[in-house]
Image (tube, rainbow, N blue to C red):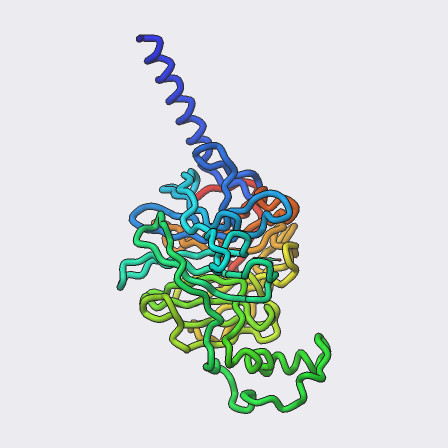
Length: 370
Ligand code: DGJ
């Protein structure tokens, strides 16, 4: 009996030592959950609720179908941001072949927010239909009574059907040239894109929505921010009070600027956005913007990354900006180092956001902690 107690005592000591050594972020390396398995929550986002962080992300697999949704959205929980417990698949793909979220569809960049008015947990994600590549370009919403799910898929949208953006001049509401004659990527075509050619094209059926995030402001109003117009222009669209639909109030940001991977935070009354360029799964240079109002005007501030690796965002692409609880106005830039050949092995690059000359700055760190 004495021996058994000793073994248990030493086992607890060793376990405690392993976990206490682990209070460090090591960007780009394998990150193990509390079962010792590499975390599988790509393109993710984090919700903080009642002392617990919930990390939601794409469950990826290995192999050629590894970037499609074969399981759904996985969730992990943590109280310290270092130790993550697997909470399982909280939004499951469906077996019904007629379901929009049937196994083999594409579910990317899930973000969960809590709605104070309804008491519901709301998940938004980028949805592509099975076998249709990236052509559907939809934003989809699911709901749950608890942060650990199960989330129930409600519906998908092409946002803002039949509504013009707030920052759209009347003269752009009709085409002034024969757009069908324009060759893609010519200066004339790009000028028409900036003037809203794709907004006009999708006015009736709703705007395209691919890479996205959701932001809940201090007044509890929520916004979907997404890459639209064939990834050429970002849109910011206000959500209804229940966060399940759109109010029709929306703006375009950086027309023709080719931004993906929108992430946002607010500090000192100013909104900051960090995005990426568009190069598929390959990394590129990040961009940053700021504005005093969510509706803009947004001022471009260039690449927030500095030092070696800055031109490729340290081989990663942003997914979310996390305000650290209890650390007054400190933020973590969360990014993915994609691994398209073996998607399940993709790693996570988390870096603290610093400020220099009132600009957000990201610097590579081999290891860091809070
Ligand atoms: C880059 C996006 O940011 C990812 O979420 C994913 O959609 C890939 N493109 C697909 O190529």
